[in-house]
Length: 241
Image (tube, rainbow, N blue to C red; front, side):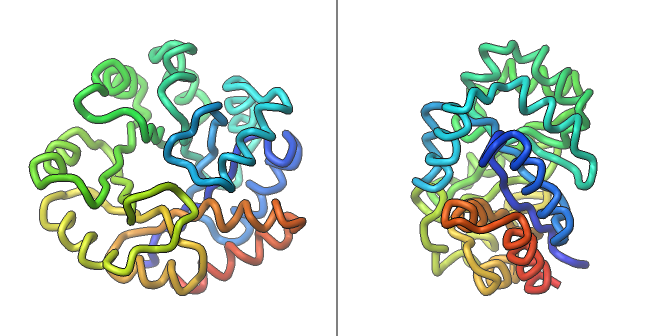
């Protein structure tokens, strides 16, 4: 079975219309799902590239409602949301997840919500049918990994390294995935540090899929077009099979 490919695009970047172009490029390149990042002013898990794109989107006036409008307008591939707890808290968890369900969102990734504090968000997610996607890092204990697996209703996001997005892929990613695999029953997708087709293939030797964000957005930051993004995503697709 081909491995899952999940590229990341910041909502409203490089513009509201340009974001839709990037989403279409990812779908045309072979993405199975696409993470649509709802920009936030204090993105603690994001490295400099995604921080920069989020800042530009926020400066351009992009809001959570714009993320929903983008999801409504885009139907070429399934979407996930990636954001932080403050925008959802302000929107209201029940209202946010109900609106996400209406927009056909397939999961919501919240890097700053640990499982111990996920109660109201997990409840809203359960009610809506849009699952929370939890993150597991290399520093997680076995007990915590089991707890996250018990809470999960979808796949699990494995953070390949001790750091933020855009860093170099950890050399021991295979051992990390194998360790988590022994303790979980859900599909495992690896993100953080995947920037080349070779990285993607290496991570996917053991995982069920890969997530690629900073490397994709760096193409646009360096003056690349949606066609360049499509070609990059297609190269990742070929590497994964």
